[in-house]
Length: 288
Image (cartoon, rainbow, N blue to C red; front, side, top):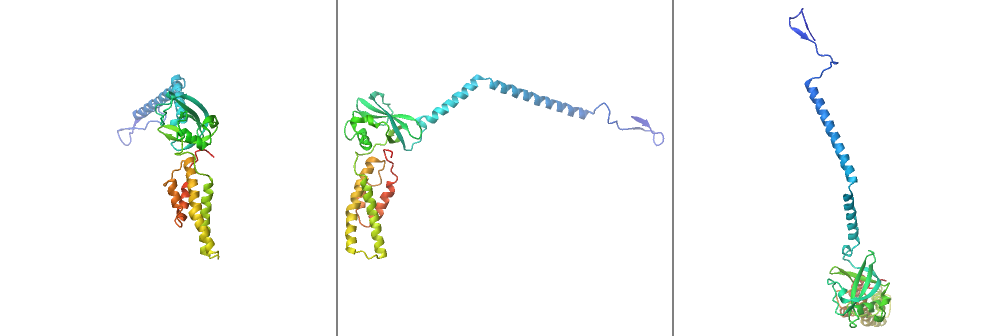
């Protein structure tokens, strides 16, 4: 609103507009318009998201795809291919006589007989069943099945007795197969106790000399020769043979190699301990 200031000037003086004026400036109009457009855009996005969510919930093809993916994941988790390559134990849950043509071409063991003995195994820590095959009837005493039966103490005429036994298995060319010893059952489990006795005797003799316990030198020498030239080597020979036919242990030396090393007085104080240490790493073919 303008009025003439007659006293001081002839120019009109305009007072500022009232705060309650019914109109807005151009800048205020632009801000209001931008706010309305932003609100409308947010509302459109929310509506689109709700529509898409409703559509997803009603889409049967997507539900089918999710169910199929879950099934494939479950199948991969329990299939033999998903198992680790380490050795484990399996229980024999079935035996059957099948034609050699039923053996998969990828099976790592060749079947030269017309028929094959199929053993169904259930992996202990997985609950997965696999089938292994042996030549049938047993060709000779050195055949894989013959060696395995000897370790499991089962007669070739009573293969049904294999049911329920637990054996060590390993991976070979993508298949689970039993660990078969390289030789027929040999040695004796008593060899281990003779070996321990020889080691303990040598420790006792060494202690007696160090502490000067006054034991007869003649008696100690006689016992020393008996234990080191007889007890230790014989016990090693028996135990090493038993290990090679009942475990997966091969060791850095042969059966005779360990026997010779443990027959050398003085040296066997070290080699016998090394043998016992390596022996602990062996896994029994028949679970105990």
